[in-house]
Length: 279
Image (cartoon, rainbow, N blue to C red; front, side, top):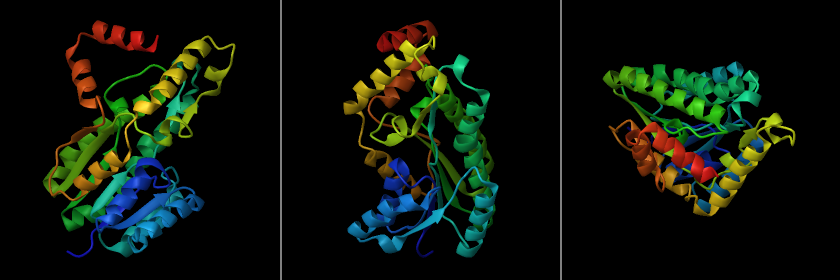
């Protein structure tokens, strides 16, 4: 078969950055995509340090831009095959429902869901024709468990989970695998520079200002317990090398337990536990 080819979206930082390096280290030819090519300098520098710079190519890709998606299609035509797609691009929208403009929800879905769908649709004809391929969608524990103050992000990840179920059922008979990786809290920028809090919830006269502060404090105090994001990169790379895989892959300390508890406890008990933890 020769060298396997992988495309990773959102490769400028976090899981995408580490996954691109890990796949390249394992011998994949990696197309690392990002909106801002200037941020690719850090990835290139790291790849050179590891001696794997020949295995990584950086390409511009804005998953919300139709012109950028068309450019991706032309790239795919030139490649001729694609073995792995890692849908990682995304950010975390935050704030309280009453105060979040619907436009901000749409923006969240444009990146975390619709952009991901557009990228996947671009690669499906190639994978279908070759009769194989792995599509790995980076979801989150937030795609299984809701959290106050995070409704845009949570909603986009819940939607991704359902869409991925449908995609897997459609693709499985064609030899294409679809998997969801569901990380818990890790030391990436998703909860710092990657988090976009609606402006209203940060204003002192907001009825949710105090509660928003408590959520921010909770995230800040929890940071020392956040896991090493390399664990997620390793998991994605492991899945990329499989010929078959299950759909869901929770990753991180306490993630599987939290999902089990949420699914088994009566809602009132679960609700009480979550709110108590925040207060």
